[in-house]
Image (cartoon, rainbow over all chains, first blue to last red; front, side, top):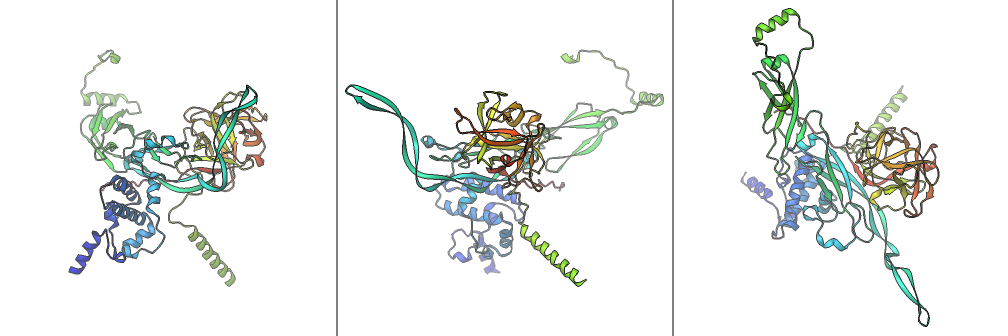
Length: 359
Length: 217
């Protein structure tokens, strides 16, 4: 029992393993997810940690490379249905020797091809290098996705510049040439002059990209993938940017982090009270109980039932419910009218006023 | 009787084998053109890509021109596949053969459009890019004509205009300055070798898994 305890604690903290064959890492712990985490949870955890643990971001940490490598290995196994099953059953040792995708491939499917630039913006020193065109894709997202988050898989087929045999003309420009026609007579002509460069041809390549729809994302926000845009024969490729377009929803209206909705109740419910559930964007029910009279236009505020805030998903907006009343459709007979007069005991009001000026 | 049973058993195991070999764990739409995808369309007969830019026709409607270009690395050749107005298609859903779509130019937000104007070089029907921010009018709809159920990425398809019934085509006429070498793109009423198109480069959106709604715990 003691031996087993020692071995299990060793495997949980194993980062630099002395015996590579018995190296056992807890991939779930590395990603910070539970054993029952969905693929979406795993992708989300990877993306968040990859930004934090990238060695370029931690130049002072000597263990940064290893932590980052562990993260890549964890994602590679847990995001693949087959490999995850094997790992759950037999641990890291049980994984078959197969081709392992390089961590660079995994990282660039979340962030783009051209290495890692903080904040997704290019560094200033690239000013002089010509760049290919940027591509902007309008990505429609539903309010459900804004509430719970989601991942969109995308296949990018793009032309990539490859070396080809021979030379080509590049940097062509117009130059003025002066030729002497005779003593004291000169002629200036325009000539096209080119340099010689190694030949390049464009070959189409394909790869999968993962775009995260983060919780609380706002309209027009962009997710850039560096280097995934159009190529430039004499320079670097442009970027691919996904621009979020939040679609209108049939039940909820978004205002910032708050959600607005309307409920129609019957006249009886408005007078005697009611109880109901509103089904929220992720399926959970918001319970409403009313035992007083509800006027048409009355508003109810439900704190914490709005959208998560993009910068801090622990903060949520509110759900504001506005009630309107549906009056009975059939006309009332004299007996019912008398009954109502005596039941409600409300005298005649008939107040005339200017409602458009707030009187 | 025995023979029938044997054949039955053979067919069943064959079907099972086929089913198994096609099964890749989750449903993959990698080979289909899907709603929301950004694509470049190549005319297979003339090897040029559908293209537009901020250059207006000098004749006809005077709207933004649509041409065919030879180079493969221009972002102005990207078009987004979108559903009909007021009936958006679901992001990532494969486009069906026979479905009416809008083809929106990425850079300028104008829709592939045609109408009763003559094209400048060949006197066929002028094809233009029309609208603002992806919204134009009823003449922005095109039906995808293809074999099978869904529009496949490496399949040659035709685009038939809803409204005037012409096919999106290129017959090889070339423009001069300022768009030298670019081919005329027009609508023609006959279906022939000039109206085949296939997708090339692009960003193909895969369908997302349905967000699970759980009951209150």
